Structures are given as C-alpha cells and as structure tokens.
Image (cartoon, rainbow, N blue to C red; front, side, top):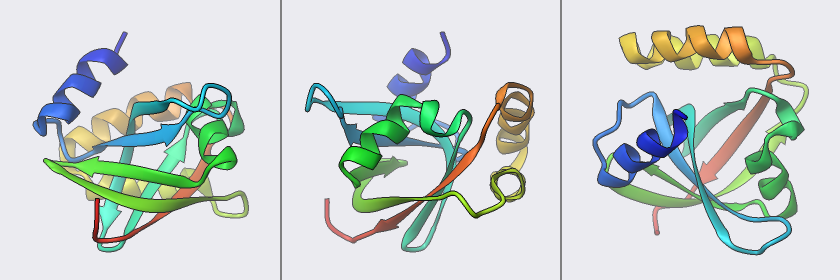
Length: 129
C-alpha cells in the first residue's frame, strides 16, 4: 500500500530524505526492481536496514547480485551492497532515523513496530550512474 506512492515520489525526486530508491536485479527474473527503502547516504556510503533481514526480496536480490543503484533526490549512484549480519541493526536504524529529521523519526516508529529480524546493508557508492 505504501510502496507504490513512495516509489513514484522517489522517481520524481521529491520524497523525504529518509527514503532512497534502491534498484536491484531480481534474483530469479533478472529484471531490474526498484524498492523504496528507509536509509541514509553518508558521503560514499548508503546505509539501509532491512525490516525482515533475508526475508526481504530486495535483500535476496542483492545477495544474488550485489551491484545496485541508489537514488536520492534526483541523482542515481551505482554501488556494491554488502550485508552486515554482525552489525547492531536496531542501533543502526536509530542512527538513520535521527539523521533524517522528523520524517525519519516517523518512519522509524513504523519500522520498529513492524521489523522482525532487521539486517544492516551497506552500499559502497561510486560517483557514476
């Protein structure tokens, strides 16, 4: 229910900064998939936390092919994603929420209510598309 309008706002470059549009390659279909994800970009690194760990389709996709693209604002950046199972995903998500202002804190409330097995994902970004 929430993803389609959020995806549209992200494509137009007008979504709150607490969301990024993550593009992965489908692990079965091979098709490009775009998913709105709560996260933050800190210089050359994007930090994301998957609510349901490897149960999230986008995580399964990046495990099969770690080459991803991340859109923030109106800019796409290519990168390589890696899961960090030893990272404290709850603490990471609290830091992401705090860095994203009021919209991040509101999104964090939903995240903390819905998450089952959070998993931190780091995306090392390059400058090109």
